[in-house]
Length: 391
Length: 249
Image (cartoon, rainbow over all chains, first blue to last red; front, side, top):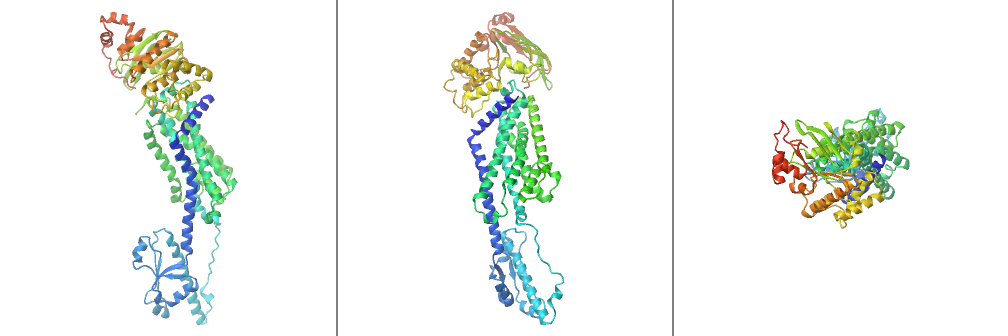
């Protein structure tokens, strides 16, 4: 049997390495995705930071309150006039939030409580909304300053109205805060790994049927399990290569490309890479086996592609489901391929404790998937409908 | 030698093969002749252990196909109508893949290959990738890869289907050569002239059963006709049993 496995695996590897178009596509996709993603992220984060830090705010009606203008100036904030149709533009996400000071402000301010409007659209998740916080904080500061002055003028200790002083103590380390973005690395790696082996997984199963090479292949006096195992090994090698290349892409970018705002967050140690690699080690072969199993039902490459695309859709949805359902890291996730890998790799990158269970359980599950899928494919290859059913 | 006894196969409610019995002798060419859907391919697939046998038995050189499938596979080389080759590999690599799967030593398979290359005039295509090969060229690759382990029994299912004159002729020569080397050659066809020109023994299959068997002369005598085509029509014209219209696979 092992001679068969070796022969088949060797043949499939050479055969598919010669498929230049697919091979180079996979190669470039996996090696390029890391750098592209990280550089894109850097751009995104720095633009958010820039806008948030921008000491520039839009104020309409600055002539209505010299005090506010004065306060903003002392905080090193420069005031810009909004565009005339800013309300419409904000809705379209084309304008930052605007502080509106009404004409009646000064009069009300002298006699009691004055009002200002803060105009924004919180359905817009673009970077401009970061300055809502800035405006709120400024107005809170202005409020505190004026009321303190008024209390002092009346001979009242300002502490009287500050029963509870709230101080921000953020326990999240810089790394943890960015962990929200960190899931992208394992997600993309897993996804590239899944879609990277699709072509070969289909070619070694449905491809054989479509070409009419399956029937003669099965005429050889070798076991179906041997044939299937050989094919699966080739697919697994491809999957692992894709995963390794993708990880290399990330590693090289993080090492050699200066990414100022990501450097502290995405500093991944060799040990973390190792944990990452170990997790991928059983995942890649399992998704390969699963795709082969599904593709075996396809009479043509195209038909198989349709079937496999369902699996890929589910896999790519995993982190979204995870986010929407707000799953906390729980042991049950380790039983679910993709969710388990996502959780473990994210924990590793976040620098949280990872136990042997985190590696062993997904490994066992993935191995079981691989073995069961290979056995099922071997059985399908005795099915006359599969052997002779051609489009 | 290939011995088939009372072979039966049913697909759904269609009895594709309904008790076929015949013997293909060593050193002779046996032709399975029958109209489309008569059960030729199904019979060949059972003998080649590609599909299971419902009842009856098939033996290749005395090896029972059902109980020693791998042994029977080693003893025969089978060419079906599935002649797909791997297009990113050369003809030689395609053939070598099968030699390796069958555990044939490289030196030996190279020797066998050299013989076939000469017989089938494959020198120019041998080290070319099979992408874009003509039907005839693909057939040559498929037949060599099926016979690379030098089996003593050769089974060919409609081997000349879709081939041009040159390729058909090359194949005919090959079949004669195999016979002269003492091998059992069995092939199916629905082309009368081909069968008449090559076969030592003709087996007419119709509606899943053997309706006549013998040399060309014997068949002519049996049917009282003076050409094989007429003889074939007479001899294959037996009333169909219920549900035996069409070969399913």
